[in-house]
Image (cartoon, rainbow, N blue to C red; front, side, top):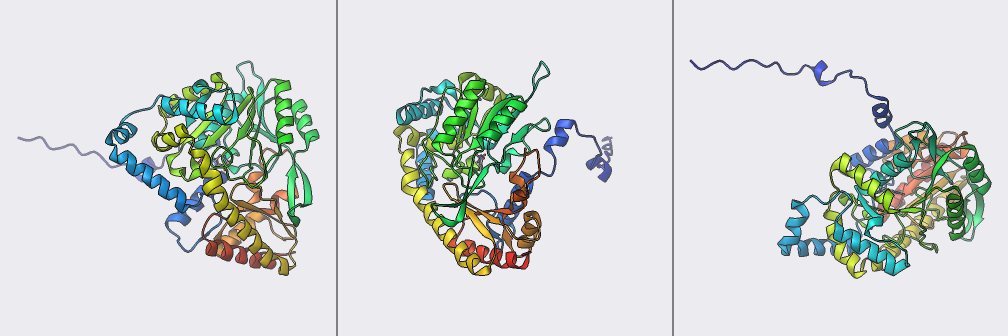
Length: 443
Ligand SMILES: Cc1ncc(COP(=O)(O)O)c(C=O)c1O
């Protein structure tokens, strides 16, 4: 007689949703972080709510010239089946594809004269993972009990760093000086590093690294060459690295509207990525660092994910080998975003100037964001963001970009980040609604 199959009870709702306690690290990494809210809103708007005006998130534009090049390159790989099969059928070493590492080191050496080889480079799953590795590698509790921090010399800084520390209070951030009225006009302002605040932080805390994005997300600020040199010197004197995030910078994608020398020094850790070139889906980050740091990043990759995705590396490899990738910034991306930036700034003037609002824009020296400062709202920008969302305009409220500060600062409640990379109609309408709603929320 056939035996009757044993009845296995299906999991109950209780079993499916257990109240298992999370570790301290688990708690820290599962908070409702700014970046999670941002990515949730962005993902939903892009997939389920086509009526939403998408001025939030950090998605780059689909630039026709770039899209065409990427499609052509993918077709070429498909036609040469071997490249395609190798790309999908193999694990890369955790440090990255050796051909890509060699080509990237060559490109940096011959373009900028930097003394780097493949041993100085490690690939990560996007710049985002690179920062998680670097901050937790260098910052936090050392084996001897010392607790070291990462110092951001100028806040506001990139929202994506805010919750990356496995240990609490990993970050210290300095308030900048604000220049009101710039070469661009009286409605513009610019942040500058307050070096006395940076030196005070360096002497009061055990700092493991100084870090900054350049151009800065959210403000579009570009640290001047002089500011970078001074930071680098401060780091060198203290025997710590200077970490510079080049997500929008040269050699690619080169979304820069102000002069800025690419910077490298033996104690610098630089990050680059393919996302803002138009490949955020490939999740490719590039770390350029002393060999010990590059190989530490590779060790972390092996533990976290065995290897990185290699699609991005394979797609751009011939352009890195030939140097053609250097043309995309000046030839395609920079003119595209510069035009978008000019249009968004003109619309901001058009809608805000007659409103009587007390408003200003950060000098837009790079990135694809406007950083709008609204000085006479009776509500915080977090509340303002909710109101705008109800009116189908998605932005990012400023509060999230001021992490690591020791004291509250009213300025953090007065700014809004606006992504202007989407269609002209969407950005124009979005700005009009923001001006409108700001009038409603005026003190
Ligand atoms: C300043 C900055 N750094 C790093 C990243 C991370 O980008 P990805 O992980 O896509 O390389 C971003 C993304 O928006 C960014 O703006």
